[in-house]
Image (cartoon, rainbow, N blue to C red):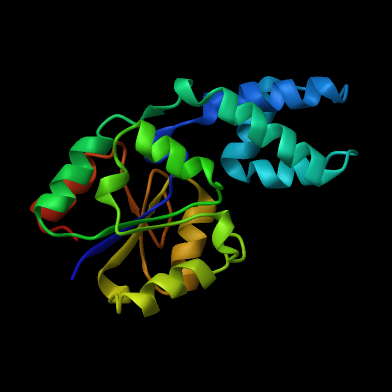
Length: 200
């Protein structure tokens, strides 16, 4: 059975603008240099976690302040174009959907606020305690718990990290990036075409 495991930020929800604002607020508190375009590129290619880890301020403190700033900006987070359409299509075809994200409890708050929580069988967040992507622990947990077929399970994301976690987990990849081990999409609704036209 085909199964989708979704990344959240940058894939289902448009949150990078919020990340930049929250990072700017956090960096200003500690007089850290903030180059908007450079930081945007860094978090897209790597992660917010790596960015905070590289700063000369306590990482735990920066994470807490960043997360608090993000929560304050929740209302600015929107669904990515086509997200609801693809989730409804998958649900209508009995394709189970899961989420595996580095986000914490705020993931549930956003999913409820955007009215899409009901599309997911289970949501894995940082609170589950698995090692961060690209480590396969979170994916393996879902594969084992729900007896999913790795050959028919797709991790859908927007970064190299997401391609890597799919590869490390032995499952398939759909991504906005071009990669040898992944099926590239330009927009979320391309997923519908890929399966309707039996390209996957």
